[in-house]
Image 1 (cartoon, rainbow, N blue to C red):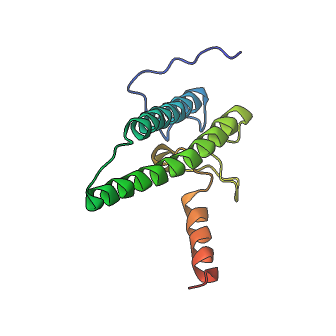
Image 2 (spheres, rainbow, N blue to C red; image 1 turned 45 degrees about the horizontal axis):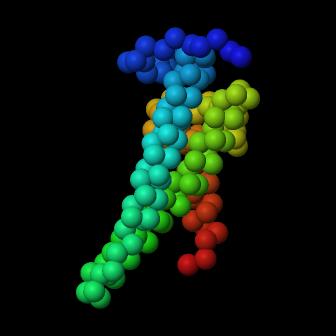
Length: 140
């Protein structure tokens, strides 16, 4: 087991330090784990709300509104479920030393991009190329 890395509470990865050093990896590991914990906590409250929320609403418009709200909530939770698998994949990349590098080019992904989207696997340039190709090949 690795020794725990000291990380000040106000730490932010900086461009002037070695890329993906232990402190940066620990920063992103904690960020990803916190995001995962938040999603799981929200999912639990959603499940409890769905179990407790089975009410008999006589007004048809109110019932339709509540069913629409539930469907939206479930769609959000499904997207978050998919995000959890991306978080797990990012945590695995941290462990294998692949985190922070573009899967297309092998170049480092900018720290600002990683901080905004810690699950990303593409650099900004590679993502833009990917989106342009997707737009060209999409059937409208």
